Length: 165
Image 1 (tube, rainbow, N blue to C red):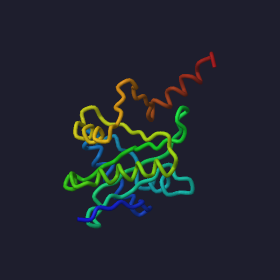
Image 2: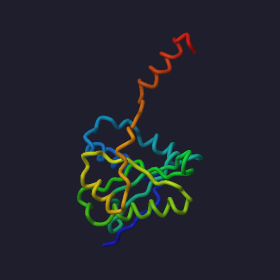
Image 3: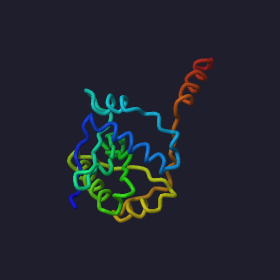
């Protein structure tokens, strides 16, 4: 059994999208994925990539992926953010997630990141247990916030019509 991880290339985008959709199904949100292969190609493999991805392989067979990007912490400086990691069910418990996590730590170290962070769903007990093996700090204090799609547009249109601006 040979475990490996390699930097994704543009031609991996259909596989990456397939993994994203499988992850969304696992996370009970299959209808939330709107990204396309074309958008992944543009956003990850253009002149200024917004993300980086690696393909996890088991005996040279694509078995999963992870996607990450860099962001900035006003307290810690450059940070690595793991957006998603997913291993196909038939390849789980074979060391691929551990390989991905180690590679992410190496990337964070090489890039002089002051922080490596990600999110995990509170019901995903196997992932939580996995992360705890690495002495991960699980922070119950912070609340995730987001605006998506039409909500962004509504904020803008509401404020534009607001005379106080």
